Image (cartoon, rainbow, N blue to C red):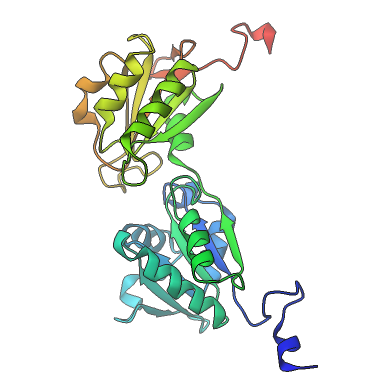
Amino acid sequence: MSAEESSAGTDGGTPDEHGTLYVVGIGPGLPDHMTKRAKEVIESSEVVIASSLYQEFLRDDGTLLPKEQTDEDGIAVRDDGFEQEIIRSTMGRQIELARAAFDHVREGKDVAHVSGGDPSVYGKSDLIFKMADEEDATDVPIEIVPGLTAALGGSANVGAPLCNDFCTISLSDKWRGWDEIEEKLRAAAISDFVIVLYNCWRNYERAVDIVREERTDDAYVAIVNDAGRADAGRNGESEFITTLGEAADHDDKVSGMGTSLIIGNHETETWSNDDRTYLVTPRGGRDVDDF
């Protein structure tokens, strides 16, 4: 058998000695909301790429070794001798880090590229695939490990607002022009979707004004911060229920990138017990007999 034949994997394309590039969603970041698969992949990968915040979460959980057991080059060695390289991820280094990840995989290492929430919901998945195409990295095995996204975490915090049709819209105009964002907001509002807004640290008041043009001011809105992160997030976990007509008056509740707005549709209603008020969007019929 030739060297070329021996290096090809059983799938006919990937060399056997290659590792795997995992794009891992860790949900909010705390262990209670991270999947078992995500934890296993991060613990077993020779290289972990993660932001400082996510490294902190993973160290507190024990998924990564403590910082004091990691040398200045980012190398940590477990008691069983397993060596792991921890690389700090930042927004400005994503292309560089994708290339580095491909190189590590070709060296035979498994790489866990950590994303908050779900990596395919405004996360890192698309960049990895685009870079793999640009870098001719079709030989690199890629696996997406899903995580809990803010829409689901925030919905759980305020009850059951997503039990009917809903959509997510990012307000960041870094990737999409505002005209396109406005068109999507208006279409979603007219179609009576429950709308979950991401990246509310910019343009959220503009977004609310557009939805108000197509939806009544008494529609319920939940402002959710750092869902699932308790006090470990950037600003602390919180939720606040208001109405569409008053949502823009509560900019003090919108704390940054960890904020999501859930805008109810015409059926979204409140439900209260002795402790708190929740939002509920019926799946269909309003009567229990209809289920």
